[in-house]
Length: 139
Image (cartoon, rainbow, N blue to C red; front, side):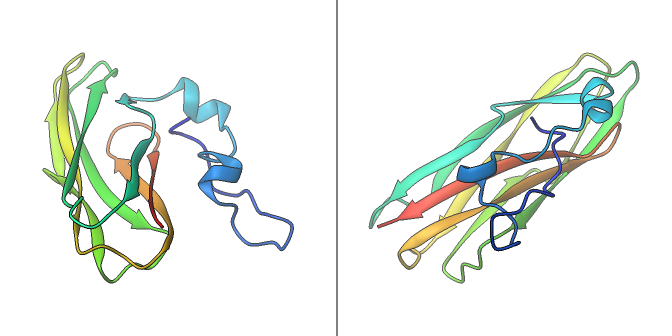
């Protein structure tokens, strides 16, 4: 799931939302050559209400490769949100072969305007790029 591409479009030709297409189209070559796994495979911050921020989630990463590797984490926001933001701490990790560690994915700031907000945590380093979808909702 985390090696899927985003080249999935809706009927109007715009990129499909995570609720419609999940993480995207499976890329078999990348899926069998991953150097790391992510757990969980998606992050849902849920429906936000006044006073619910900040929210912290734990993302576990395991180095499945045969050598040490450094993995960098970046947030790719799909929906503009000037009030709240997603951040990954620390921004990178070095893991020995077979080692696992975790980062914190946090949603902080003020309560956004009503709507659905989503994006991806992009993990680069050894092996194919991994993409972990995230979402939060405001009524």
